Length: 304
Ligand code: CA
Image 1 (cartoon, rainbow, N blue to C red):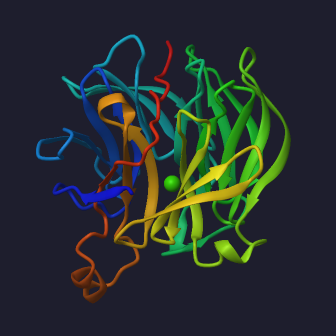
Image 2 (image 1 turned 180 degrees about the vertical axis):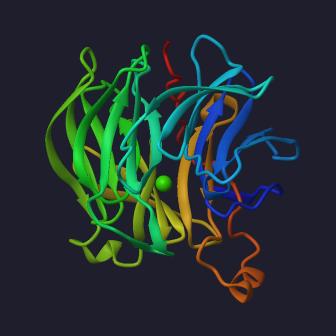
């Protein structure tokens, strides 16, 4: 039986983008709408931060060649950040004429960045539909648009053999599978893997959000509004396990810690009023789930 621990550190408006960095033995994550990156030790007792005023920053992925360099998003831009000097260099920018921002991003097993966009919220939870797209960016900062018509571009993961990409659009409550060509970084044959609207077992799961893969090739899916992460068999689409968390707005997850035996789970207090927040001390926390009986593996860094 797993053990869920609420870590004592920062409470995020929207915690997101967890990435375990084994070279520094720490967890990177962002407080998305606050424009703040966190680098946190395993018990979250020591957190270093980097803040970008008035911007959304949604992912943070270390460079393969240099653990001091981090690939981050800032609104519609992708930047290289030197963690020690806090010097940021613009690498790419998308959608200059559209009211959007980046959302979740991950690197594929070859170290290419994949990241999608979404429309800006006109009020909490209200988003223009279909404004988002999905992009990749290679080591030379060359950006390719692969999909459009996305509403809330979210979690990304790749099968253990790299032949399938998993991708979430939260708004239609779907996890897609796509054929993946690792050599060229191209996708094909998009199909529904899981549709939260199609089965009653997902009715109180909220929206699928961030995802990660374990060492057995099974998917872990954070459920925004559902207070849980799900373990799903991507071969069959079957729900095989549920881990409940003590707050509802669960945003993303990644494996980390010794032998990648812990699941780090991020959450949000965004959308709660003051009374609800005072009654939900765990909202926005990072959770560490241990004793799962399954391990993960290192997430890909950005290859450059
Ligand atoms: Ca997300």
